[in-house]
Image 1 (cartoon, rainbow, N blue to C red):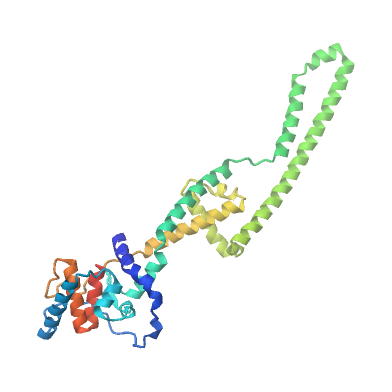
Image 2: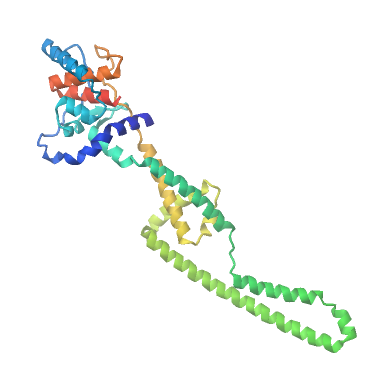
Length: 325
């Protein structure tokens, strides 16, 4: 299937450079509404038409010019490129597609490889960021410092031989007990205050990060959209072993934005993959009377010559189908 897309892309390369010079709206011919016909060339051509075909083939061989793009084909047929874009060709699944729609599909997906590379980079960045967020410190330095002070006082108290001190110097024993109790109470108060300050800071930080995230992704303000986005984020992160709790623990809006963008790219990647069902056009009459020549180039030239001589829409479709094969 990728080969078919590459063929279609190659056919449109030259047309993309020239299409801006063509005004499709200037065409006044009424668009075809008749059923699509994609017959292969048969022996039913008249002698006069066969003579014109052979003459045209002779001229083509003398020119020795390959027909490798739609623009070349339009030149050979002596018709506007816009006429070719209106032609319908039968796909392998039996569905008819205009060349214009194939061109639109190519235009919409020509940068898919760049998107895939960007997606892969974001996946790697995302994995590292989530791991850092999950394993990083969750306590402020002030809380850690206050707790360390409490533990230090407790350790000093435990290392003091209070029984010996009470026997040898009862007065000093009572004074040191009072000093330790006071220092311990102060340290515990500082720890409690640090915890309260940290909670306030965390709440303010979360609020700030949420506001920045809403600015970056306004759709999150809508509850339905928010649930949809959250489901996509958890599905993506889950593929790398991260749990719902891991995602809930992320507060940095930059990381959440990265997660959202990565999940959207993942969904877009799957969507494009589902839509990439383009196949090479095939004849709707595989049992046609006359077999195509074994050489693709020769077959294309013969069909092009016949289409040019007959100026018949069905012959033009056959020539386009041969070019796309």
